[in-house]
Image 1: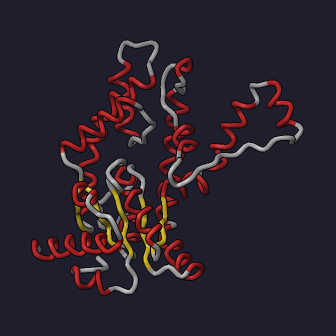
Image 2 (image 1 turned 120 degrees about the horizontal axis):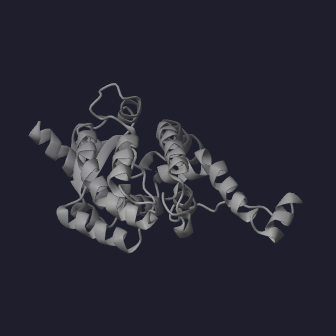
Image 3 (image 1 turned 135 degrees about the vertical axis):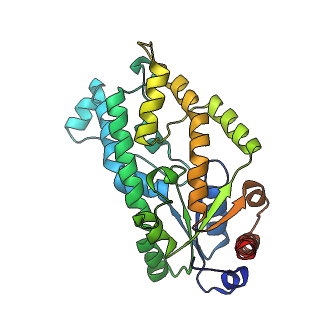
Length: 285
């Protein structure tokens, strides 16, 4: 790890951290707080995925739908309108919409093969965006003068790395430049995330083998699949499957709880949080 103790982190001229964990536990909230406080560069992996690596896929999908409307088709064919996504750090809906959900097209679903294709695109984009982190650390300092850097990862990072492999290219690259920080949720957080998801299911990324198993189990005997019902079916299992993968990633860094994160109100409290996590790890070693 690039910092071994809390005192070393506090004294560091350049503080570099990578936050990971399930979506909804505070990664982006913390990152936004640090950016707004000043002195921290906020690198959003999801934003990078949507604007750099999947931007054309997203825009082409919008255009494909627009071409079904005679008026928009005419305007597009004559280059009279411009269609693009408007992704922001706080609104990743264009990326989520493109990723989609499999099932009945009458309910907004995609053919399963097309869904798999988009899942594969997302996995490749996420790996590329993660490996861009080092370059953005340099850019943040060289262009904007930021010494401190926070990498706000996607909830699916644990699906595209193998933290049990000491030679995993993404994990080894990131660990050389940032302190990995797992925001660990409790059973209560898991239940609340599931309740939120049940109210508004959203597209998720699954490892290919898990997706195939879930799809086979859910669709057994069904000719028409409700897309949202499938997402709800898979979400709880996804939460359970990701926990040991996050825990393996945490062996490369430190762990904080979602309760601790919720209590952080400013950059000083964030420094205290990370320093305490480093000292806990050092003490347990």
